Length: 282
Image (cartoon, rainbow, N blue to C red; front, side, top):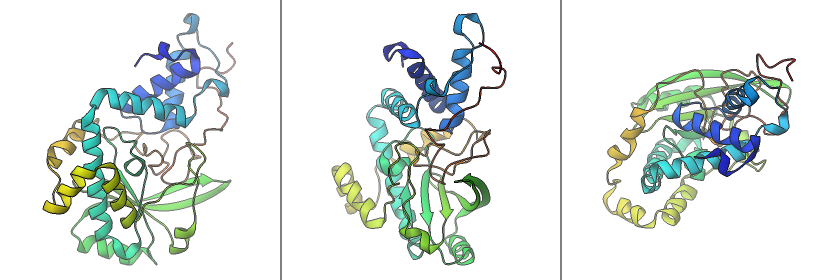
């Protein structure tokens, strides 16, 4: 992707941040834009420069650049892989039906890239029956407790990382939270949470032919080949936790303690301190 096509420092940073997320496995918008700014501004007139918040692209701008990057790199394969991921999500949600699962993030919105996982919100009365249920399904999982800062408060969330045909991440909420609509930090709109019926309707609308074949056979043609490409992704690293486009993610930011709601990213209106090494420079 040519940054010059879009012109301006902000667009150059957006393009570089998108490349970092797609090619180098950086999974947080916040982290990607800071690294991109450091790389680009460090080259301005051969000296380091101080950046302004206005120079940094919004999460939405990076997402658009990232989607264009993915479409150019993957072509029609991306649409087929999106359908495969949605079917994996649908079958997982059916298995988790007692806990009112909801699909969020890139698989829900269609904004996937290589390495995208499946983000589900679940709403058990308590964590114990959920864990028993997951064990009874025979799923292999890791449990993680994450503390984030939201609205000036520290909040704890429990995540289950499940190894499936495609990686699943379950974020645990209380049943009362099912009525709440947290807002996306990418565009400020309420997060879209899809139930089983809504996801089925989405598959029928966006993937009509593939959906009909799935209903007839119970299988997705070439699913293993479609998803195994992600096995070539970089190994998990310190920036793992997003795209999740918000929709995606857990909000684990590798270098910033204040994170967004699980399934979301950093605040696009947030002010940023100078990057390390940029303080006091012109």
